[in-house]
Image 1: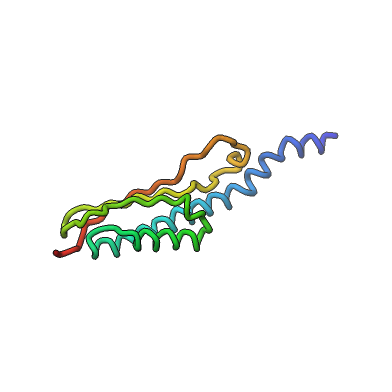
Image 2: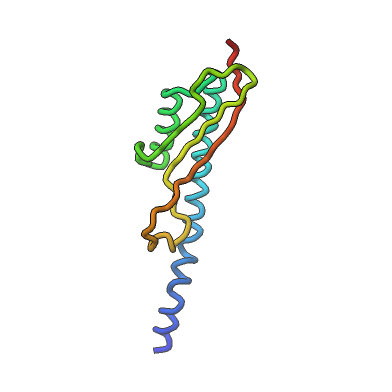
Length: 126
């Protein structure tokens, strides 16, 4: 009886310690992939002087191919007006937040999305 009671009491700790490192690594990989997609989009937009639908679709398709996100849940906003050299442009991407802990499995409330916003200087010369 003591063995069963000890197992039942330690089971949450065992589950948490088993899955927490994997979930943390997955969340880190999602953040790194989002930053890489933003970086690639920033390079193209800096040369063009603005963000357009082609850049948005390339960033979105990268995230869909790497993490199998639903393309409808990825939202990207950026500076769409032509920006001369030396002026700041921004891009903001919103993706579903990955699960960060085992406790999130049992959570029924809606999680906040993962939002990343970056600024870059334009290199477009009119």
